[in-house]
Image 1 (cartoon, rainbow, N blue to C red):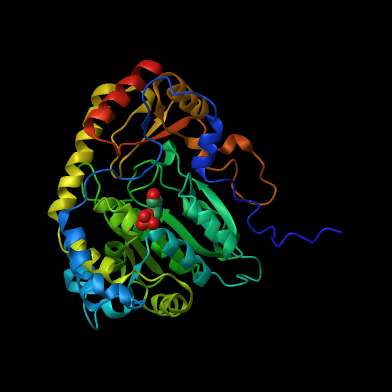
Image 2: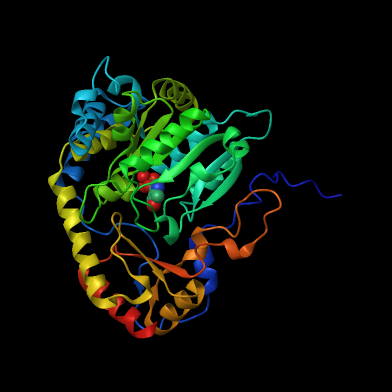
Length: 411
Ligand SMILES: Cc1ncc(COP(=O)(O)O)c(C=O)c1O
């Protein structure tokens, strides 16, 4: 008799990551021209010189275990950036709504923190039943893994053109909201580049408070925007009642400073949640190494490189607008660096672009789900990503222009 596999079914509902799925789609297909990779949202712009210098200057502290709460310098730099970015400096400090020493935590890239927060936010039962975690559809795939790991039902709420690509959580049945432990929302959104208005964030936070839900706002693209600075959930909370109750926000240097390999971000929010999260993280989560924390502090302290980065993305969006015009329902994303193009059949388009033009893009369906995730809903026609491709504008301007020209010719 063979031994039982040391595995269980909790993650059966999790499809493969979008990138192996894309590789399977084009397996064995030679690229029609020299390859240009626009599938992966990995920033390729140069990061600032002071990063390497600061890591070298602080290399001695690789010999120490880093504190989970980071250094006072790190927390002060994050507090300074939040104050400048959202014009909320008055609300930050000891005894104020956002006390950096107790309500800001460094994270080893926001992905782990987005995941781990669900474990701490989710009770075993809510409203006397299995809890739910709500998320947009399409979405950053980590949210669904987090919900499953936390023992919650992931519920996928359509973020489509008709609702400005921001999910209508308030329209969900009260019975579902009552058992919801956490809501993920992403603004600027990956993949659609839509931005939540201050009014939307205020309404959502009010809803979360009404139902005892933790609102988790993924703002890792906050510093990459087209015309207007996207509003932040901290601003919404402060305007509502001056507290950060029921709110946690996530920010990253991966996009702002083109440092995806640094694995550095932070989260901030609700005083009592942050205390519980800190205790959990102190036992179970990865710390940010001290030299990387010093480099991160330097990055949050400096805004010029982020502005230059933003300008470079903007130029590539201009390029896309010129090259694609009003085809594929093109619109300028208000934030982030993705194009979300309606090509009719995203898988077909991704295949053709690779086979004929060597351009690798992601079929939208790999970022979204066929149904709501609720028991009994098997309606595959609900998949809001099927018609789309996601195009990451992370390459150089020259390569981006070449890829866009090929796209316009092939599709
Ligand atoms: C929407 C969204 N959230 C979170 C992340 C995680 O970023 P990081 O872990 O590099 O901070 C990403 C990365 O691609 C993302 O697109």
